Length: 515
Image 1 (tube, one colour):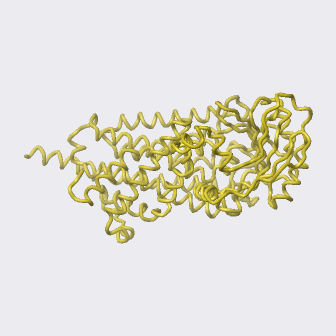
Image 2: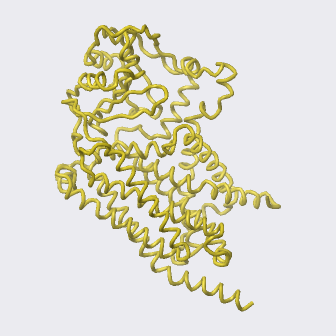
Image 3: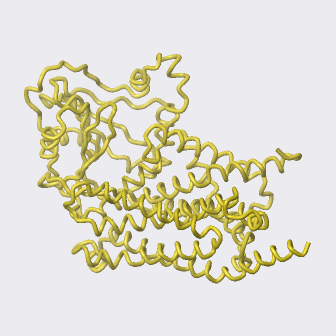
């Protein structure tokens, strides 16, 4: 630690940011893409209809679940909505991962699987590592709060720095200006997103109250927090299954809104209960207004009570983090742009750490701790966007009917990221060249994706989506194209800065030899 309070905060800001900076970058990239997870899910599955079907056949999908997953503890069925006009459904049981498949809303036929936006949503909140990943993300969120608070303390000229950007200065000055601008620009957002992200899983991180009051019974805790009708299993086969359509119509009138989530508890038992809940688009807080029905007779049982003040506050924080509110995509675009600013803030902050130690980096060589930081910066900051671009290419190149298609897309993502990290190790002594090469390949893949889309699809390329006014699908291609141009500009900029950087390093070595 340092002598003065400000120096101590600077030390805390530097090391809290460096230690989890790469992990936070991965979380931010996943979360930024997940702002449009449903739209990306639709883009990756060309069989999804363009508009919501008025006669979505939920019963056919439930019949498929009855054949394919009768022993699940609960079935979840997500009704079509404007963001994703297909049906999503899947079964869940204790001890297994919850996954959904997409179904045609009219025929009930299963659509080709894809990692899609759901992959990035899961990457954002648990790194695809289950409970361990969830705790790592929570730790990263808490460290981010520390970095934000300490960063505000040490930036006395915070508003002046916001209006200062000198890209031509190069090196540490340009990186620091970029870090300051994106940090100040998104400060309220970053503070909110870090706090609410931790708050969503607070009952998993802070278990002392559950252990003491509820004797570690999480089910009892949630029953008191959000009570709902529940039946114990009778261990008798279900005599008949009531159709969903009348229950959906009744719930629509009772709840005064459009149903979205249908869950069927104990689907293969005579005690089965069907719950129908509204979507979350009309309110910031998660909308858990729910109607409950007997799954055998279809009779109305009860309506879920209004949440208490504490639980409603929790729902508000969760809804604020996940940005599912609002009938238009304006809020999601705002979150997306501020998420990009967060990615730049993290990347530039990691580079500032290296640039401030440029002389020591040049002296220490590739195998030092500085070399490891340089490799991680290259492998994560330049490697992950390349892996994302490769995954989107894989989605269009892998045959739609290939078994395990979703897994192959994820394999492509991981393989390209590993290759990028290996390239960073090989190029650690010439970092400017490595940045330029990885950025250039990313730019080529992103700019080429709309062309690949034109070649491989008949109804999802820009020629069709723009002509039909399908701005949701067109926006995916246009956004990818814009990001490709941005990466191309960064590759060009790094290429121009390569020679001066080399000259500075050579000058440092010459000066040291002269001593």
